[in-house]
Length: 123
Image (cartoon, rainbow, N blue to C red; front, top):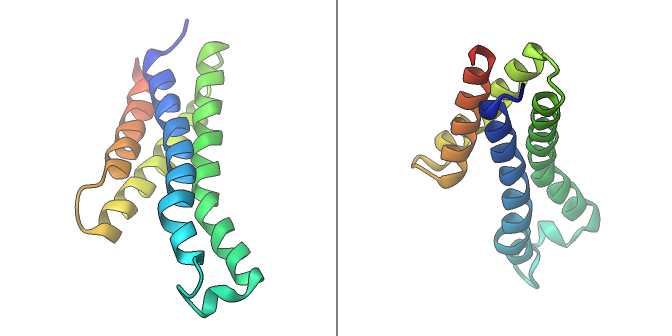
């Protein structure tokens, strides 16, 4: 039987992955790398490092989200996966909130994904 809460949690994780990667490239990284924006970012290795560090959380959210969806669709019982996904989503959402010191859509999406992943264990 498919677990709807895990599917929605996974979908939110995948959504957060693509939104963070695409919007980050468009509105954060491109302006940072613009001509004359920063002398530190003129070094290609530094630019590559900043880009990699930006996209690592996106990859983690997307992979965990896809695994939650796969586990739910194949009726696999993976409580450790659900706990891990809930933990990563929750810590990421709280860190987003703490860093920005205000409510941000990313924090809402990730904390919701965490709550659904945890609740899906008991559904």
